[in-house]
Image (cartoon, rainbow, N blue to C red; front, side, top):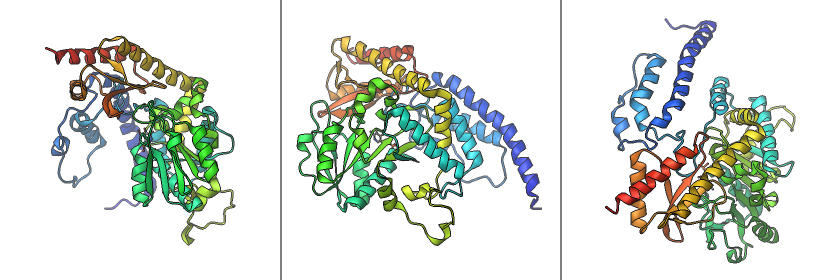
Length: 452
Ligand SMILES: Cc1ncc(COP(=O)(O)O)c(C=O)c1O
């Protein structure tokens, strides 16, 4: 018979959560201890994991222990381990302990923050953590900030606000801007103008041209390929002169601004109309958590606010509904994990994390520069090293594939000045000098093996 006694239901959920939760937390802690011994890049072929899974869902309930068992036996071989200390591809990230646990708690509360009244704590905590993070990064006081899932969404939201505010339909960015901007422009039906970069991969201001018909210029602090920094002050001048919205994408490098010694890279950012920074990249927060600030909240709200009858409330105007500032209606309690991270690390802990990453990258850069036949391919500003081994593009591609296939480390690549370069991005909190050394040894060993 159907159990309609809800209090019994709650007791059962709580009892199950205690039992299964202990097992799940144990699983998580064991995983973090043993991940170092697993191959970083999943060693499976496309379709392999799917073929090991049942084609149909179970008819009857299974215990949670069966899920944990299959996580180990079926899924784990198909996991590329972003929590591995030798994950150096793309922009390496870390889900820290407070962030992991806060995800559990956010799922437990299951707040859906589309109106202030549906989630007052989530809404107001979000304002507080955005304000705290703005202070940590040295941003101007008083900006409006909220959390989006990704920088792709936050940047697209900025593009929408820019189009709405200026009545123009052109996006300008550099050839090194993240592809999210091109994708956003395509989805929005905006036309895109790409500007050439200089010899160190920064947008060339002298190539910006007339911005009279331009809705938004996207400048990047920490480009994806090389972490180059566009000249934001000069771009801000050009935008101001033509009434163009300036959006700054600091998805990766923005986190480094917790350290005053990297703040040079944020020069001019206080003049931006909007800014995106991803704590889920380099600030110890689990995916997903992307921060979008704007100095023009009224314009952002005008672009997104649409309140149908069923969402109208008698709440006061200062009962802010964050769904009026972006594309999504339902919003997760993402602020909880960032709050947990900011509290459990504090400014000093976050600074230490960033400085360690930069120091390790600098160590690797020294070894590469000192090795005959190897070269550094871009100035290193943060924790990303762009380099090449001996030989042509083809040989460097083979080198990358062989190192990744070894499972010892995982790196990625980029194209700089038409050449294939390898990228080593430090961002995992568990990475040690020993991991960097081991990776360097593997790279040299594999490269030498091509000669024999
Ligand atoms: C500079 C930059 N902007 C935007 C993005 C896209 O980030 P997301 O995955 O949060 O959309 C990336 C991803 O690496 C990036 O490096």
